[in-house]
Image 1 (tube, rainbow, N blue to C red):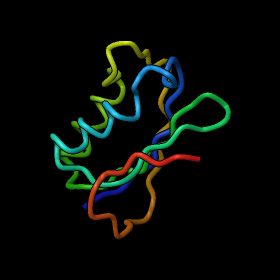
Image 2: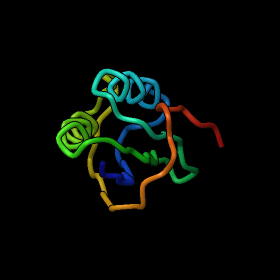
Image 3: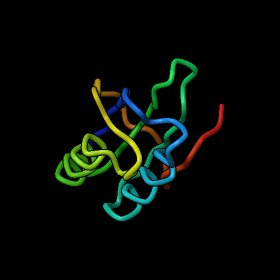
Image 4: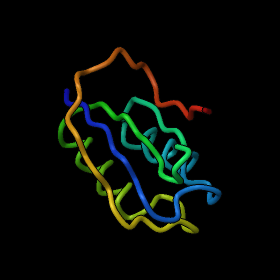
Length: 91
């Protein structure tokens, strides 16, 4: 298992990005969370087997939301958490 945080910048709020990210995570088998940030970015914590995590990251970079556009993604390794599913969070 591996775990990362993603800070996603671009047109990622108000376009269904969090919900389509959850769908992507559920399809691939990734657990974690996604939430909007006040600066207009989206923050994701994702955890799963390395090959599934890599596929998830590529899906996020391509924007799971057809109305969204990802300009930049900052990726950081983080300690594993006890997630059991992927959740959309609210600030």
